[in-house]
Length: 330
Image 1 (spheres, one colour):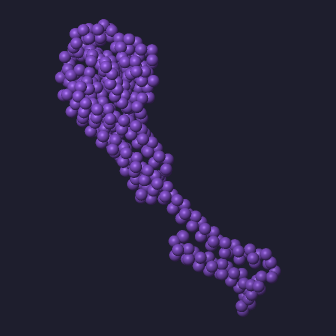
Image 2 (cartoon, helix red, strand yellow):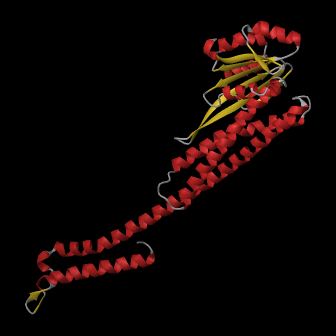
Image 3 (cartoon, one colour):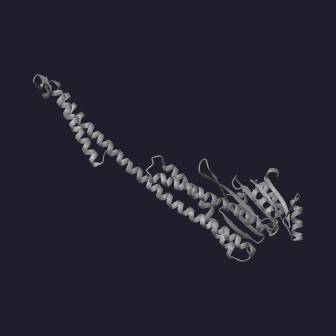
């Protein structure tokens, strides 16, 4: 079990104590009816998790969800506790990508088990912060549940600001007429916003239930969960707005591309028309060189036929250029 268990400890009266034998510790805590243990797991296998479950006697449906993974964010209520699934997010500055992980909590009367999959949202800082405030740990496992959820949602708020900045940047470049914007870039950001929505929106209903239904969490803790609910509601609304704006930006970008292509085609057509005039004249006269009327045309002994044809070509090309320029084709 070495590296799988990131940390484990017993907390009595807000003070940390060592936990060597999990089975014996749980029996003592249940007998005394005081204190709890917090076990942190990182990417456990099915067999490794089963060994922990032998001592905790978790609900089989919750265990099944934890083993399968890839669950929708939710809070399930069982007779012996709660099962919480959260999507953890990490913003990668270099690529502006949002990396998704998973965090599960089993919350019972005398234990908390956190299972983290992926590298996002490590819980070491949350544990240290709680241990520095023994008065909060005295509230039991619900204090850990709140602190973990609060840490995850705080990350949502941070990523919300990052996505907002990315959206502002793309929107400014698109509507400034910059050619450096690629539709793939807009679509990628839209995908990141979708991942953000999948993490935040499903949490609204269970959090609202925690804050409104009596008995699910202690009454003194309900205002704290209400604060988390407000943050999740805000970032969820922002994510929906970002998604709509990106749809509009993508449509505007594609419309600009279509307009630009039309302008390019008009310019190409105009230059082709200008080039066609001298090509036509040269082709006609080149078909019967000996009988070109202007070939022997002379004034005062000077042959002007060749130069007259060049002048006509240049005049026609210039006239077409002026006409296309006035019409906006060039």
